[in-house]
Length: 478
Image 1 (cartoon, helix red, strand yellow):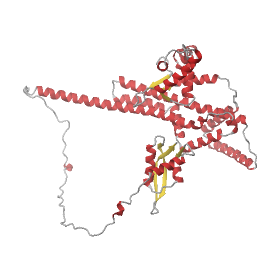
Image 2 (cartoon, one colour):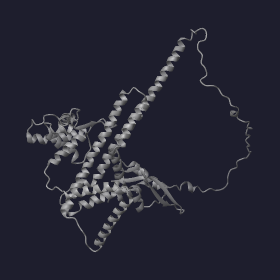
Image 3 (cartoon, one colour):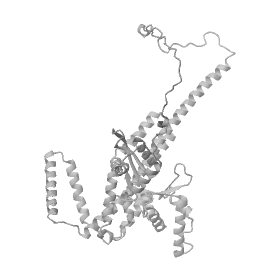
Image 4 (tube, rainbow, N blue to C red):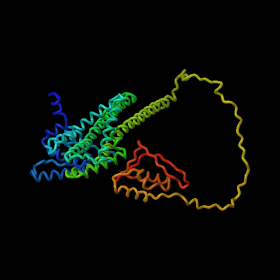
């Protein structure tokens, strides 16, 4: 934090330039209302321009017609320019309409301004307890002595047994309303900060993707050197502390059991009288779905990086094949030109590229030819009566009935795993019915099929034989 560093940040950092901009109140208030308050990540230019037009209309009614004279489109392009960098303008694949998203610097500036507001309640106890809990995790996680770990676990077990005994005797220790509010404020702040962290992680991967594209465009060396350099940077990000933390978080939030647990905890927390008196934002109940959406956006950025590398390899192979064909055509053209002017003497000589070696044991032994035996038999017309009903006794699975079961289960919850549906409605038609459920999940845009996690489903056929199938985790969402 020396003078020259701060001077460079003041001139170059987008967040500092935003805070010092002439129209900073307009920019920050509009972007906070449009993106952060409703937890929206990406908006199309048409919709964003309409919202900005309405926002400017209300401001001009209060400040006069001459306030903010530019159009909404001009303001958006100005905010997304390289000079400012407060919005990210991009074109999604297969879409000609430009889309806009906040940059991490803009979100940091808005969060900093939000922290300037005087809070009516500043909690210190919960943060102190959090510090103690984190320090205990650090010390216990780094402890290598088994005896010390066992002693600590036994101490915790004794404390838990003592608390269980007090509860059995009717001594319930409840938190005060102040303690509940303090912890809820901390949970709310941490949950929303996670969304800002996702933008920064996505920005890092997007920066790597851009650097790879620039390097591919200007690369003149071999493919091996380029791929080694690119994959080295990709592995460095994945193996960094930030990359490992992101993948651990993604595995945690993708667990159906953890999602169910988090949804239940949020519902029970917001139902408490002390928390309900704060009139909390009900969108917090779906904050983990916002995490999932933000994580999927980050994963798609990584997928685009892999696609760019594959496209580069395909283009290089095509260019090499084209160069070979050009050389061959040149040789053929020159041969046609010299067809009537054959040179005298030895024109050319070509030695064998490798010595010819004929080994005795390479010669196959004699094998007598196989003489097929064909029996002469006259086919006679059959006289037995064959029951043709079996041709019509095929298994038919009613997908409409299965979809109705899933919709009925989602009426009381936001999502449900396929295994939970089958606990209520066991398989009646075996594997065919299970495949029908998978077909419904694949056709449903809101359903999630996690290929990295698997689950085993068992059922019993009509003949009493128990069957078992292992398939990816399937989650239906409302």
